[in-house]
Image 1 (cartoon, rainbow, N blue to C red):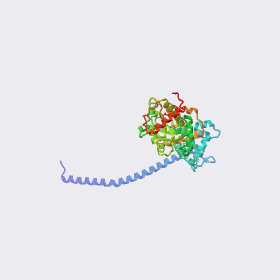
Image 2: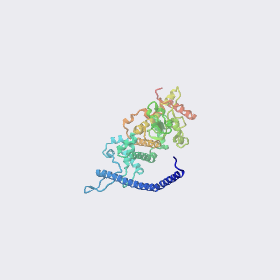
Image 3: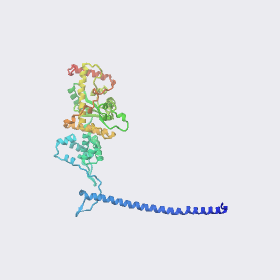
Image 4: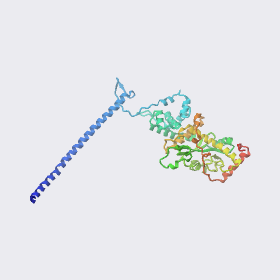
Length: 443
């Protein structure tokens, strides 16, 4: 039986009143509870932080107390609680090398030069790379800075190995290598790697003519490749087809084009173009090409000898490449090969001394020209100082030196650019034969 309408309406009104009260009353209570919970939470977090800080302070205090080198004792008790902020490392090996009684042969093996040359380099770089001591720590000495760089370049070892060898951090070693290479470029390159003046060029021409019979040769040009880890961008540009069939691990590279004098000392280098580029392309991109064509190098009437991968220009002399060569052309090619051999041997000694040029390096792509340029400068210093090389370092494969135009590499036909240079080459070949300077096995 249904309740009367009046009663049902009354019950609904009472229920609505109760609901209204339930909705209104808890709001203030809820806000109070939340406020109290937030305050309690903040206090708990503060207590937790204080507890954690105490644990950390206690840990570092125990470390300090267990290390006698980090304590100041008064009556046997520790009165100082300094935190450990420099990791202890051993630099015993370098300290031993730096002693005057350390064997010269071992020093030369480690740094690719004798102690006299090493100290001369340190003295020249001192004003640029020396740092002052601070209240927190002593600065790394100049000799150690240079030694870290030379060891890294000489061995090509990873930075982790260099770090353990010298008792320094990995990031510190990386920074030192770049700093010293920058100093070498700034201070030593203008002195040891520059295009010769007119007086020196005259001497170079005489020396090359005595060796080959070819007049007016002022340099021998060669292009080699330095293996790198495949870059993240423009991978195909650095892919080196020359290496693919020989060693798939060194399929990516950058180029190093160098011109050397009769002693194998670099007079010009162009570093860092992608390994997919041919010798002709690298030459056209080089500053040497621009300056030569603009008359900046005074190359009028003189030659730089290159391989068949280079174009025949008014100042670049290359061998004959067509089929069915005459005896005169064979004789000329053999003499050209002797001049080119000077540059190839120079690259052999360069890569023999500085092992970083034979390994896929960790150096960033943008830093490679700086590091490789420093290797070329150091090579020149060693050559000019008559630094002897370990015979074992010279026993590197021809693949490492990387012939730029040997029988294993098929270069595309380089188009003729200068008719006058073609006639000049024919005249030189004829004179070699006419004056009995050919001296080849073909005659």
